[in-house]
Length: 461
Image (cartoon, rainbow, N blue to C red; front, side, top):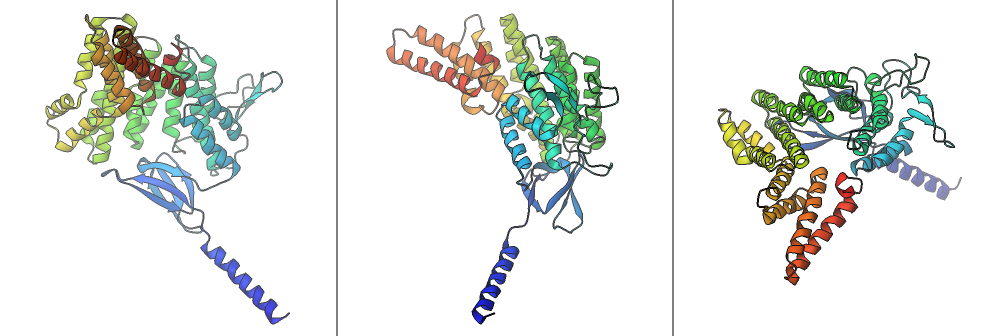
């Protein structure tokens, strides 16, 4: 071997070694939030070992011991894997976030490996494949994170698809049943009585997934959609009890308590629904009084405001259905009670410490609460004995500009903005510029509604 050849090989080996030492190691990322300040930070790690409803275990280096982070502090987890399955899960979640529930469900079904087997020639269902069919053997072995994520989000996509597709009578029984089979471990329909669906709550029994609380929420809503109200209430109660026992995020206490409202709404009993949603407000006040961490106090305030918003939403629905000026007036009075200044006065009357008062006021400023309130006020203005169209238009316009991140209320506001602007254009027939302005406003609202929310009830009206 010549000197030049030996030198070339040596330099090549050195270059390879440098590439190996400088190449970035695999790095999963966990975004966490300080529960006092609300400040977010990122934990980078070699890999994540498990994600349960109480803790996330991870390794900083390939051979290091596990460390853990409380799940309640976790905002988001980004896995570094770039396998086709991992990329497929990421793509499906993007579709889910955009509201393309059917497309997300189709993709996640293939990735999860469970659910109904379909005859591609006839479209008929040919048996049910358990989600646990390809799981590793042994109770201590966990499925890969891609399988866990695909299964959970498949169940969620099925539920949201069923909710979006139900008709005025609340009917999409097959959709709710599909969601229930994916999330609950029940006997396979038409099977031998021994095989089960391998639903998420059975597959990750005992909170062995950070998605376990939301999976319980999916089960409760699927049961309500199927009209199995006693079972739904028991599941909502279980969620509330689990949230208290395990010290989960306050959201899950709230979601458990409002179960009575969800069920009453499914029965179309709007009076009972309003009462059911209102019942969550004192519960969140109790949690707020007990909480000492500022960020968590704000979360309690947020869910208090969400409960108040749900009552307003039900009152709005009731007033719309009845076309009752009196009910619109009652709606305006209720919305006024949720305004930040009114909430501050209410909280001060409780003799709470200032951080607790500030937390409740912060919740009153939540975009979802503000959007529902403004839409309700706009409709109340329209239904007064002498309609106040300009004030109504301003309320709807404010929702479309400031609270477009609240899809259901944004779609509602676009619909009514188009209606009011169209009527205003007709009234301004003798004022060319004013008429053109209102016509443009109405046209843009309808265009945005149909482009962004083509499947919503408002686009179909």
